[in-house]
Amino acid sequence: MTQSTPLSLAGDYSPTCAECGKTASTSILKELGPDSYRWIFDSLGGGNGSGDVISREKAAIYARAFSEPYSAEAMRAADIHDGGGLCLECEKFYCGGHWGLDDSVCPQKHYRAHPDPFWMPPELAYGYLRQMSPDPEYWEQFGPPEDWR
Ligand SMILES: [Zn+2]
Ligand SMILES: [Zn+2]
Image (cartoon, rainbow, N blue to C red; front, top):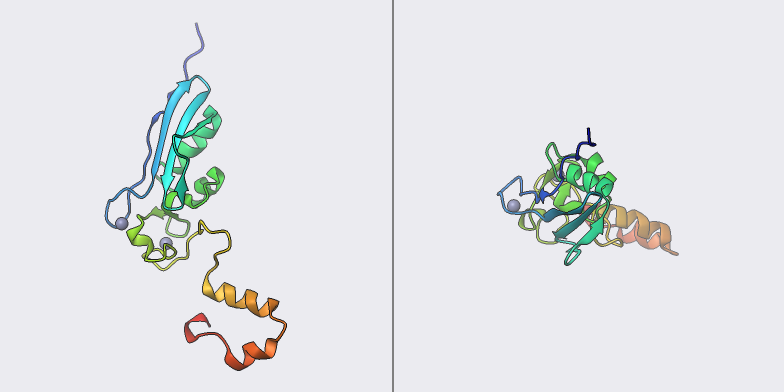
């Protein structure tokens, strides 16, 4: 007997928004060879253009991250910069419209693993600024806006 061919992972895995059904991000796997796939990805935080050539092993990780049941764990394993629109707390995908105006809060008000590495939720930013500030009295005096507390 010849070795059985492993199942192809090729397919369109693009997830849709849990709120409105629009495409949340694009994730497509094309088979190039027995251990070679092209992964085409596009999301709010950017895409990889005409795609990256990846191993079957990596393709399986991406296929898992974009297949139901969606999970934060599978997305972390895939290590995709903005999670392709996945809320790591809801474990649901949302489109750009449902990530809010500044693309940072899901419909359930969870902060997003943000594409901008310097971005942080305001309450964290406040703590950080306080730590960095050479004049803590300033912060005592003026404090953060009400909704940061
Ligand atoms: Zn939506
Ligand atoms: Zn959420």
